[in-house]
Structures are given as C-alpha cells and as structure tokens.
Length: 583
Image 1: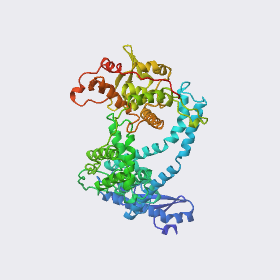
Image 2: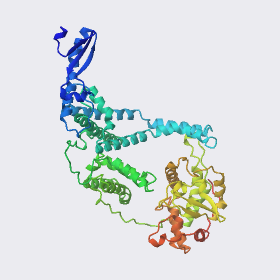
Image 3: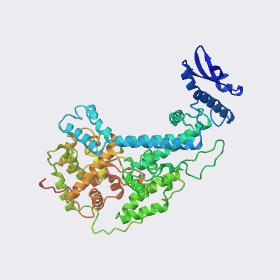
Image 4: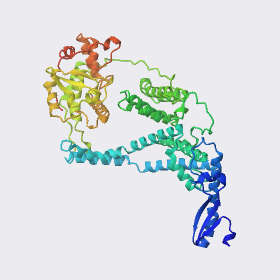
C-alpha cells in the first residue's frame, strides 16, 4: 500500500515525504535532486502527516520558481530552503498581517501604560526619600554614592514615562531610516514571526518577504505615532487611516515630493527642533516654556500629524486662546512663537512641505502703565527687610517642610538681584565656587556651566559692600560645594532646579503682599538697577555688561567692560536702611 502512495519514501523502517526538484531549480537547493521531510517510524502516524508534509515541500518548490522568475537585483538572493509554510501571501493577507502588527504594538503600549507608576506611587516614593533624608539616614556629605543610590528608586518611577517615550522616539527614527534605506533588519524578527505563525510560502529575501517587511514598518510607524497622540489624551484618531509612506513598486523610479518626506508628529518635530538648538548652546532648559503651547495645539486640532495642520487651524487655535482670556502678548510671545519656530525649522529641513504658521500673527495690545516697572526705594527696602529676617516655618509633618535651600534663597536672592540687576534665574543657579575674590573684592561668576545664561556668555559681577556686611560671604563659606539655592546635584538638572526656586520665590513674594501691582516680582529689581545706574550717570554699555544685556550694534562687542568700570557703579549704589522687623 505504501508503494502506491505518491511522494512517499520508505527506508530502513522510516518514512519520508519526498518531492523531486526540477533540474532548473536545483542550484537553489545546493544541487539536491529531491526534498524530503521525515514522518517518523510509526506507519499510521506517518500516513496522517504525509499530505501536509507534501504540501509544504510543494510550496518550497513553488517559492523557488518565484525567486528564479524575479529579477536578481530586486531583492537579495537567499537560500530557497528558508521557507515557512504553504500559504500564499495575498494582498488581503498582507493587509491583515499589517493591521495585526499595528494592534500588537498598540496593545503593548497600553499594557505598559497600565503598569506605569501612578502619581500616588511617585509621591509615596518621594515621601520615603524625604523621610530618610530628614531622619539623617541619607547624607550627601557622608557618602554621595549612598545618597544617589537612595534616590534611585524615586528617579526610576518618576522618569518611567519619559524613558518609555524616549525609547519610542528612537524606534520611530530607526523605522524611518529603515524605510529610506530599504534595510529592513529592524523588523526581521517581526517578519519571521508573521511568516512562521501564518505558514507563509515565502522565501527570506524574496519580493514577498520585502513587501511584508515594508508593510510591518509602515504599520508600526502608524502605531507609534498613535501612541504619541494618546500620550496627550487624544484617542479619537484612526491609526490605520494615518498617512504613511506608500509602498513603491520595485524597479520603478519615483520623483520625490517637492519638499516633505514622510509625515511626522508635531511633538516629534518639537523635540527634534529643541535637540538641534541645544547643539547650538540654545534652549538649554529643553524648551520648557514651549512644551505647553505645543501640547495645547495638539489638543485643539485633535491629532498630532503636523502635515495636516493648516493655516486655518492655527488661526482658529489663536482665536480660541483669545476667547479663553489668554492675553495677546502671551499668545504672540509664547504660543505662536513656539509653533512658528518649530514649523519654520521643519519646513527649512524638508520635514514639512509648507510652513503653515508663517503668516499667522497676533498683534499685542498696547499696555497701559500706571507706574514704573521697578520697585521704588520704599518698596525695595520693605521687601528686603522681610527677606533679611526670614526663617522657614516649623512643620510637624516632614513632607510639609520647606526644602532646606529655600530659606537662604528667600533671604539672599532678592539682595543679590537688588545689587547686581541680574536675572533671578541666574542668581538662583549660583554655586559655591561661583562666589570668589579678585583683586581684594568679592564677586560672583554668572556662567552657563551653572545653568542657563540668556546670551550664553559668562560674566563677573562685583558685589556691593552691604552684602558682605549682612553675612552673605559667611553663608557661602559655610555652605556645601555645589548649588547654593536649589537641591539638584546633576548639572543637567541645574536649569530645572533654578527655575523651580525662582518660581517659588516669586509666588512667595506675591503672597506676602510685597509686590506692587504692575511690578514683576522677579524683575522689579532688574528694572530698578537700570534706573539707579542711569541716575548715577553710568553708561548704558557698563550697565548692560553688569546685567548681561547683549549689545545692540557691532561697536558694543569691541573691548571689555572691566571690574574697575563696574565697581564705579556698584560702589556708588546707596545701601538699604534695614531696621529689624519681626519674621
């Protein structure tokens, strides 16, 4: 009976399915004349397996015929024996596999998000670190590595979402690079898995193999772009319908589009733009002030595809901000400034076909001022009296206690701003090593190494004698190495630490009733310093050098303003009359 069954081979009591290889295909199989597949030694079981095995062998022969028929330069030659099943890859099956891959990526994303630390978990971990610090269990001065290790669990849970988002951005960049180059190794395992699980009659490296890989790249890109929208709370989009690069036909030369290549999410554009600017020593805070405008625009249009955002959309967004009560100045200087910068950069770098934001503007209303921008002498004196005597309030709960650096910040930062006219952020980022002596005088070094300096240039500013009399130098000498007014230890976090302190300081001054209407709490002393300097007859060039204002013309960049010239202004400033007041 066995002899009558086609494509069956019996030898030494073992059974095989067998198929003869046509002579023109034998080079594809290392010169073999037949393909075989073992069926075992049990005759009934071998007969049950026979039909399926023969079908698989025939599929391999069929795939080899397809490979021979295809032009050699369309796909790399591979061993035709590397075949996965007997199911032919149709367009319908290709669509289904692509959509399954897309949903698999989205399901993995949702599972990850459900396992991300909650706000309560992050807060609890933070409270545990604070409790260990307050109990003395953690001490930077005793062992800095011990302090770093103790804070590691909090840093991990706090940064989990950002780490995951960064990984997805890297994956998107890799997929786009694979699409552009045609090297599909990035989805090799996914392609192999799809071929295996679906018993595809497909040869590794064949045209069908390449087509399946391209489809998986396209659908994974669509899925990842959808995850970025979901990060911002947008769930009403259809990722399958997302505009993705069309699959080019092999051997067909296609003309590139006039400007843009593959579509890209607005948030991805924003992060790429900030990374580019940081390489130029700009936006060292990571574009912190522009993050909200970009997310707000994404929420307004309901998707993240920058290529679908039109001028009409941007005008409607601007008008919506106006109706919501946002000031025209804020819309122009913050919201539109962020979007226009990103769109212009994306268009210039062929990431967008057009710059839809180019002609969208918001005219700022003329502000009616009823007083000067800076503090008056009496206002400044009252504020500094309160700051001089400030002590942190006692709190029974360690979680409610003020951070240790805020007491010296509230006590000394306003004084330093008053006598230097510096930006409050520049003062909040001072480190112990930035306070030094030169030619017998104390001075501070305002440097980009400590955080963010608007014009990215260091400057030395001499200190007024009253600061030394009040004990500022003694405070510095007793401080630990590193930042004086914030708690960040990683230089990459200095900007964030200084901004947090300056924000808390401004809010505290406002709550104390020490900031008059129409005066910016953290800029009142900057305006006042300029006014006092002009009253003393100082030149604008010297005042700009002290305060870090960039020059307006080429002549301002020749020569240096020396410490001697600065001292001629600083030493003529009147000290403040600071009688004792209750804390």
